[in-house]
Structures are given as C-alpha cells and as structure tokens.
Figure 1 (tube, rainbow, N blue to C red):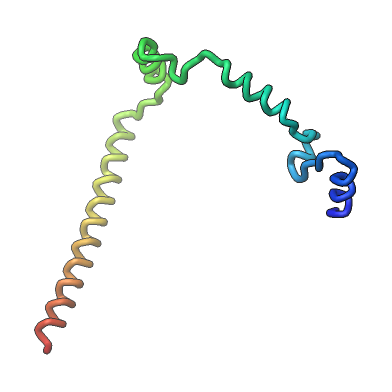
Figure 2 (tube, rainbow, N blue to C red):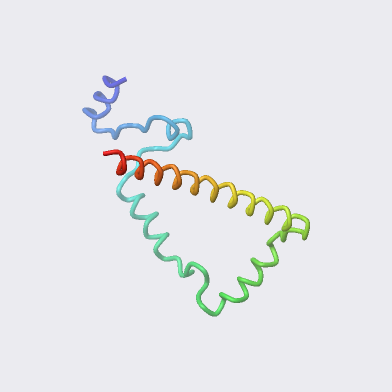
Length: 110
C-alpha cells in the first residue's frame, strides 16, 4: 500500500484519501477548492439566532414544542428525587461518622 502512495507522490499526483473518504469517492482537496468553500461559508449573512429582535418569538416557538409532564409524572419524578437525596444524605452522613470515629480513635489511642 505504501509503495503505491510513493509512486503516486513521485508521479506528482496527490495521495488519495483512505478510509471513509475513499468509500464516498472524495477526491484530493486542492487549495483552490478549499478556499472556494471557505469563501462561500463566510459570505452567509445570517447571524446565529437571528439577532435580539427575534429572540422572544423564537422562545415562544420553542416553548410550544416542549412536551410538558403530566401531574402524575411530576409527582413520580419529585418522589424519585427526594428518595435519591435521602439515600445520598445517609451515605455522606455514614462516611462522615465513620471518618470522625476513625480520627477520634487514632488521636485518643496514643
């Protein structure tokens, strides 16, 4: 494979891409084609987001797309969060108690 690339390079032809690009049939990238694509991208006049005047209408449009949870789902999610917080608090309190007992044991047993 490398011998073939060496021959192409010696013949003055650019090396062909390997991997996915080769499967898609892409040719070698030249400086002119790269600069042409770059010039096309930089001439776009649209600002991301459309500017400050379009902000609120876009927010309203996006909020209409939201699928809001039902009351039952909110109760379920809230209970799951509280249960997780109780478990995590108990875990941290247990580690704190054991660490404190370990430090106290180490300091009192000279």
